[in-house]
Amino acid sequence: MDRRQKKTREAIFQAFTELLSEKHYNQIAVQDIIDRADIGRTTFYAHFETKEYLLKDLCEELFGHIIDTAMGLPHTHYHYSCCSDTDSVFLHLLRHLQENDRNILELLSSQNNEIFIRYFKSNLKQLILRQYADKGLFAVSALPEDYLVNHISSSFVETVGWWLSQGMKEPPEAVNGYFLAVIETILKQE
Amino acid sequence: MDRRQKKTREAIFQAFTELLSEKHYNQIAVQDIIDRADIGRTTFYAHFETKEYLLKDLCEELFGHIIDTAMGLPHTHYHYSCCSDTDSVFLHLLRHLQENDRNILELLSSQNNEIFIRYFKSNLKQLILRQYADKGLFAVSALPEDYLVNHISSSFVETVGWWLSQGMKEPPEAVNGYFLAVIETILKQE
DNA sequence: TATTGTACCGAACAGATCGTTCCGTATCGG
DNA sequence: CCGATACGGAACGATCTGTTCGGTACAATA
Image 1 (cartoon, chains in turn orange, green, cyan, red):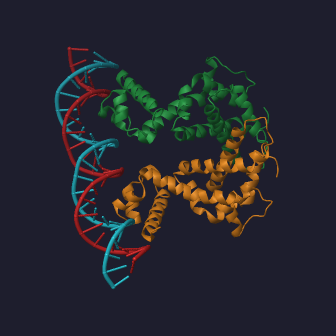
Image 2 (cartoon, protein in one colour):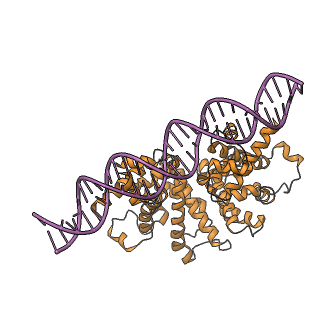
Image 3 (cartoon, rainbow over the protein chains, first blue to last red):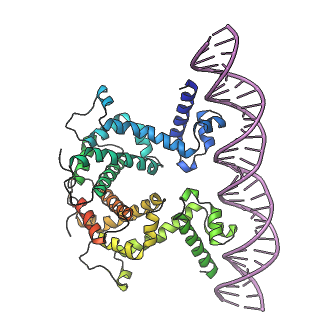
């Protein structure tokens, strides 16, 4: 990929992320992004068809990483792991958010949280399905599986949102404890 | 209130509600509402300062009613009650939604659900606080109260959303059963 | 190094939407 | 019946959008 393209794309992402933490998405004009990124109008539209597509690409870049690592894909073995093997995937996510993904946290706590929450939940559902449903780890088998998956992912995202609203005072372990307490009826212990 | 005002306001609400069930909120132009409601441009801006305020007023009108009845306010006694006294407030809400508030359900299942979900949750929190927190009905007292209230309201809204996504095939009683099953750890039995 | 392709820039464009203004008309409440 | 007020229609400047064009700067390749 051309250095110029990569540099421009990064500048746009950076400017957009900054603006998202300041204004609401609807109030951000393309001109704002252009000015902040210090690029030409033509250049922006050469990279992204519209503001919506820019948002979509940003989301995929942000959440793709955290979910990939949580999935336990091969390439995670080459990184330093902050969690022991016995920790739950949720604690792993909380720690990872706190340590490496502050930009996600910032966007989740911004005025635009709904946009990112949708992506977060959608990715979490896949993760939960892969992690639990396949292995029959749902304790309440009488309830529809998609209902349970939806409930767990929503509860986790809500937990993270609450954590943020409290200023992240509590350690990830405590928050994980809260979360496990409210869904213990559903999830079998690992 | 002037008949003309009331009539115009109703026409705007009606047109707006229709449009919301067709398009996404962001894609609705003021001109669309004006055309659908068959009013003048000046008239719209005489009633609502902006599209945002129109949305806010619509939400207050929609959710104000259902929450008021659920709160058990005096005026509910003069209505026919579909629930016996021993039914939970959640079953009451589910039945009320199914029978009387199909416009809320339609908007909750529309492309604009995030907007209405925010209002729904906000109202539910007040309801839950009034219904349970005051009476010490939280079983897991070790967890922060606001965390629990947030969890319950979110779970209920998610439950309704799931119910809708399934085409509301199941009766309110079954859905209420699912909901109580996933939050039974938190809520003491009534 | 010279060349060729490609990314970028700047200015300008038409089109859509917004919120406001002015003035004439129609309708309401008393 | 009359004063008040809500409505309608047309037009306004302002803002944002997405595109076009011609020229410039930079990257990869021979």
